[in-house]
Image 1 (cartoon, rainbow, N blue to C red):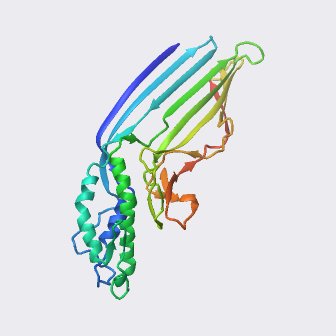
Image 2 (image 1 turned 30 degrees about the vertical axis):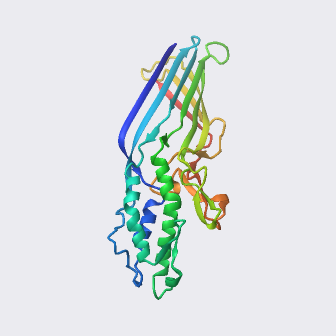
Image 3 (image 1 turned 90 degrees about the horizontal axis):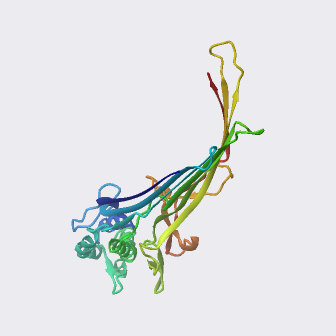
Length: 337
C-alpha cells in the first residue's frame, strides 16, 4: 500500500478583477446625459467626464488558496487493486477593488452636476427624477435624460452598496468544486470460467461549487414599488452553491491466447477491451462554473425575482449548464505479436 498526503498554499496580489454590478453601463448612461436644450443625438455632459473605453472596467484583488490532497494505492490481494484520491481547496479573495471606494467619493460631485445640467432632480432620499418643469421633448432629450436618472438610481441602490460590500469583506472565490474525489478498483480472475478476465469500475465525484456571491440581488423598495434596493441577504458572502455529481465508468479486459503457429509474425494473443462510460446513465443537467465572452453563458446571471418582469427586483441564478455524454460502449481488440 502506498499513501501520500499533501498541502499547498497559493497567494497572488493585484490579480485583475472585473468591476461588475452595472458599474460601467450606469456611468456611461450618466456621462452621456445631454444638458437642457441639447436635443441632438450626440449630446452629452459638459463637465468633461468621459465614458470608459472598451467593454470592461478592471480593478484588482488579492487571492489566497489553501488546499489538501490525499492519495492511496493498495494491492488488497494479488489480483485486487484499489485506488483512492481526494482533494479539497478553499480559494478566497480580499482587498477587492481597493480603488473603487475612492472613485465613488471623488466622482460624486461631478455626477450630481451632470444630472443637474440635464434637468434631473435628486431628492432627499437620493432618488433621481426629471424635473417636471423640464420634462418636455422640446426642452430636453427625454429618453436619454430618463436613462441617466434610472442609471443614477441603480448606481446608488445596487452598484455602490454591492461594490463597497465586496471591497470591505474577504469572501470565497468562484471556481471549481470544493471537493474532488475518485475511487477505482479492478480484479483479475485467475481460475474458473472467468479466468483471464479483468473487471474494473471507477467513480469520479465532483462536489458543490460557488458560482458567486449574491451581492447584486435586490428587493422591491417598500417605499417605492418601481424601485429596487439591496436586500438584507444581498451580501458578497451569501453564496450561490450548485453542483455535486458523480460519474461512473466500467471496463472489462480479456486476453485470448492463440496456438503457436509456424509463421514468425502470427499473432500470439488477442486482447479484447470493453469500456462503458456514464455507467449509470446520468442525464441530469450539471450546473458548474463557466465564464465565456457571452454574458448569457456566464456562471451566474441575474433574473427577475419570481420570473416577474413587472417588478424591478432581481436574483442571482445559474447561467450555464451542460450534460454528461450519454452512456456509451467502446469495444477494442489488440493483437500482440
